[in-house]
Amino acid sequence: MDGSMGSFLWTYKLINSALVAAVKAIQKGLYNIFEEGRMERTLHLCFSKFGFNSDPTKGPVLTLNDLRAQISHQHRRYQRIYEIAELPSCDGFSRREWSLVMTNEQYARHIQAYPEDVQYINTYIHSFWPTCDLFARGVLPDARRRRNRRRGMRDLRGEVLRGDSSTGPGEGNVTFLHDDDDFVPARGASNVDLEGAHHGLQQVLVCGGLIPS
Image 1 (tube, one colour):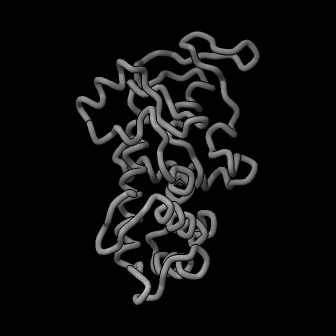
Image 2 (cartoon, rainbow, N blue to C red):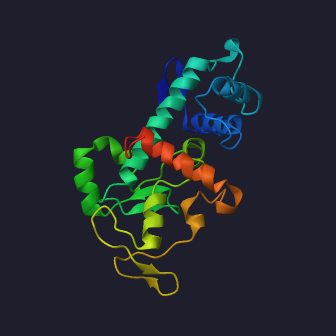
């Protein structure tokens, strides 16, 4: 149970369903979820396609305000995931575990300073895929650092990142990755508009204050 937001009692399953409905409402990135009419479309899909109760006599009914509050919360949540992914102490994002990764020492220091981040690091992030698809068009949180590694650019520590796709990890313990590794597996680079996806990444970084607008 993820708790209540507004008058509606949310569960992880309901949050995931609402986010998937929102992804459908923006038609794979053609629209912004906060544009006029998209939230209303999402609410309609919640009732018609995802089994949300619409009968007040049978229990709580999701309202537009409840939905908007939850989507806005998930947006702030994903901005925080991006911020953490850009930190020098973060080793990246694991697509196997669906989690931001830190060493035990890095994790202990970080959580001591930011205890609220315990839900994102070295643990499964609930509803990550639809959140990523909704707010960043499927671009993973550490995509920019992955691209820098492929190009041998400096990371936030000031170190040159190098690797070799044929021999495995090289200097800096980094392996070159394919472009598909920048995206959630359900989509992959071949199934997305690369220009649009990178624009989505740019918007998340701007909204999160990580780069200037």
